[in-house]
Length: 105
Image 1 (cartoon, one colour):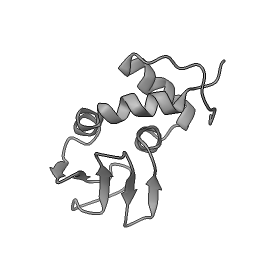
Image 2: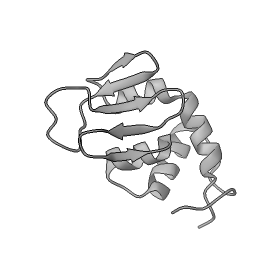
Image 3: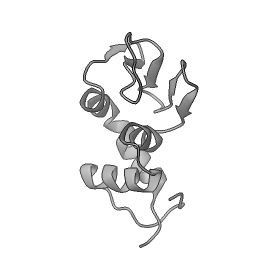
Image 4: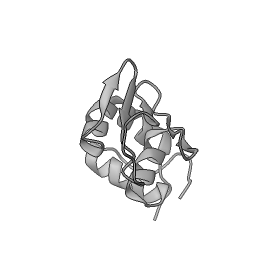
């Protein structure tokens, strides 16, 4: 299996991020440049601590200190899979080539 072009996949995913977060976090809401939702990876009763920056793709759960710097890491976190698998899944969903670039799987 070849390398994964994380930069290209993240750029494509960032452009689609508003639609992706609505799909992945259907109970969330946009507030300015952030998407605020319940964290589906833990028992979360009230939105507020789990946030995704829609401009940068950075995300964090301020209640647990889980965080990441891009859309691939968000997809991996939410699905409980490796970043390599998340990148390949996003690439397939977005029609992005996966070979080349830097490797992190």
